[in-house]
Structures are given as structure tokens and as C-alpha cells.
Length: 235
Image (cartoon, rainbow, N blue to C red; front, side):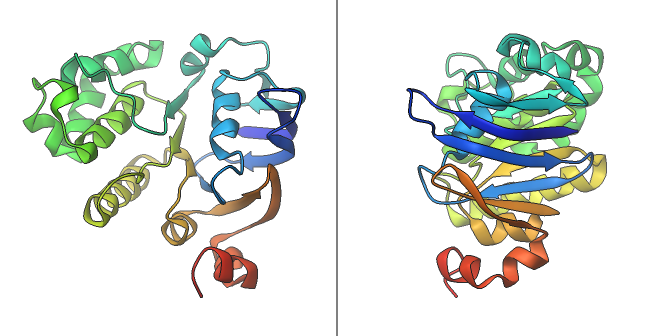
């Protein structure tokens, strides 16, 4: 579904990502882990079209999407749940979800998707008429995920969904993502600071350090790798 080949990206002449290659197959959950500053969010911004590559390619469903502007990429089926949630605080929960459903597929499946989202994330149903800015951090994260799902995506990209959340709320978010994937077979690309949970949840994972992929493999391979165990799993 998503193929990235030798991707080099930077905000200045110095690249943040250097010849990064990865693949996400349909139905997979692929995790990208690594320390702060490794380039994980830069990777997502490039896939979303916010940043333009210096070199390399991004293919989605076999099509090079380099020339497709960021505003059009959600219509291809790419949903980006950004780091820091970034909900619209002056709009209600329902209005935020409606904005997520502005894609062609989102509008077509709006009513069905809304019922599913409110079932998966019942706190949003309780607060559907509440302003997003008055929600707790965990509720805003649920809303950001719900807004991504409302677009009826083929690929859901989740950038640090547990950031700033209590362990209990982070566990809830992971449980819901697991449930959503189990029920829909939705393809997911996950960047996450909770490395153990990310690797355990993933079909395949990549370790990104200083802008380069230094390790890759299934969750069994990564969880047994001495470097990963020492650096990220505290073992």
C-alpha cells in the first residue's frame, strides 16, 4: 500500500531523513520507533505532503504521490493523526468529526462511520456537543483519532498517540486501536514513544535513529534484538 524508497528530507540543506526506505502492506500495523529527533514526525509530514522530499519517492497504492498537494492526499485515503492532537478547540466534538469526514469517502460513509466511531470511543458520544477545547488531553486524543477515522481512510497514520497521557489513558487508546484494527483490518502506520507496546502491537517495525533506519523486522525479531532490548525496552 505504501512504499517509501531512499527518502531524503530536510527543513534546510541538512537532511533530517537520509535515504529512508520502508513498506506498509495492506492490513498491516507498522511501527516506527526511535529516540526524539530521529525524524519520525518528519517522515509523517512528508507522507502527508507537508514537506517535499529532496530525493527519493513515496508511492501510495502503486502511484507516485510526489506531485499531489497535501490537501488532496486525504482524498487518496491517507489520514494523519498529528502529534499533539491539534483538534479545533472552538468547535464541538461532532463538528470536529464532521470536518474529518470532508473527503469523498468520508462524506459517502459519514453516518455509518459516525456510529462506529462513537461506539469505539463512547466518551465522544457523551461529549458530542461539547467544545473540543474543554476536553481533557485523553478525550482530545480520542477526538483526533475519531476525526482521522471519519475520513474513511485506507491508511491511518498515528503520530505519538500516547504522548502526554496517563498510563491508564494510553492503555485505553492502544486497546481501542487494537479493537478497531481487528474489526476493520484498517492499515495503520504508528509512531510511538511507548516502544514496547508499539513493537508488540505491530506486524512489522522500523527503528529510526539520526534520520536513518538502523533496524527492521517483525515484532518477534525486534523484541528479541539486544540493541532494542537495551536501548528501548530497559532490558
